[in-house]
Image 1 (cartoon, rainbow, N blue to C red):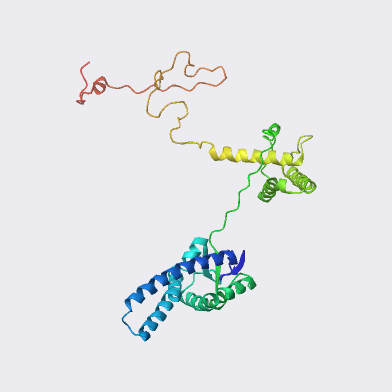
Image 2: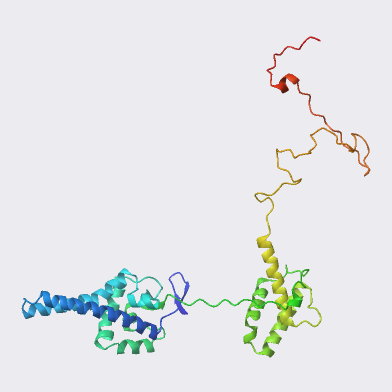
Length: 320
C-alpha cells in the first residue's frame, strides 16, 4: 500500500499500479486512438483532395494534435482519470493526495506522453516507471499524479476450523465474560493459520493462548485435550452463544399469545365470569390449605332488566 497523506493528515491505503498493468492499459488506449486517427485521416484525405498542399498539411497536424493528444486529455479530464485502457485494467489516475485530477494534470500528462510514449515508443516511460518507487512515469512526476489500482482482489476469508466432535458441548458452562476481544482475535487468527505454522511453533503458541484463556475463564481444559482442540472448542461455544442471542425470539413479539393463553377482550369457552366462585374454590374469608386467607369475591353490580332488554328507562319506579 502507498503511504499517501492528505491535507487532513489521513493516510490513504492506495495501491500504485505497476508496469505490466499500466503497459496493458496504454496499449489498449493506443490501439483505440490510432484506429480512430486512421479513420479520421482517411476521411480528411477524401474531404481535402481539392485543397493545396499547405492546407492538407495544416489539417493533418490539427488532426494529429486533436486525436492523439487532445482526445486522451479530454477523456481523462471528463472521466476523472479513467480511459478505456485504465477502465479495462481497473486503474485510475489520481493526485498525489488521492484526490481526482483536473484539466491541468491531464494536460501535463498528455503533453509529456507525446514525448515519452509516442516519440520514443514507450521506452522512456518504461524506464521511468521501473526506476520510480511508485511506478510513475515522467508525466506523473511533472503533473503530481499517480496511477492506482481501483479493483483490488478481496482477501480470502478463512473460516475457523470446527472442534473435534467429542468436544462439542463440553464447554456449555464456561464463563466467557472476562475474555477480551483482543484475545479472541489472536485465537481466531491462530486457528485459521495453524496449518501454515511450524508444528513446534504452533504448539507453543497454542499453549500460550490456552493458558491466557484459562486465566480469563477459570476453566482448564479436560485431561488429555490438546491446547489447539481446547481453543477450537471454546471458540465454537462462543459462536453458538452468539447465534442463540442473535436468533432468540424477543419478548412481546407480534403474534405472541399473552399469559393465560387468551386474547384480551375475548372470553374463552368455559371461562368463569368475574365475581362467580367456581365449584371447589375457597369461599371468601376462608383459610386456604396454604395458610392464606382467600380474598373476598366482588359480585358484579345488578343490572335492571329493562335496561338489559334494550328498553329506554322512564325514570319512574313501578308500584310495589
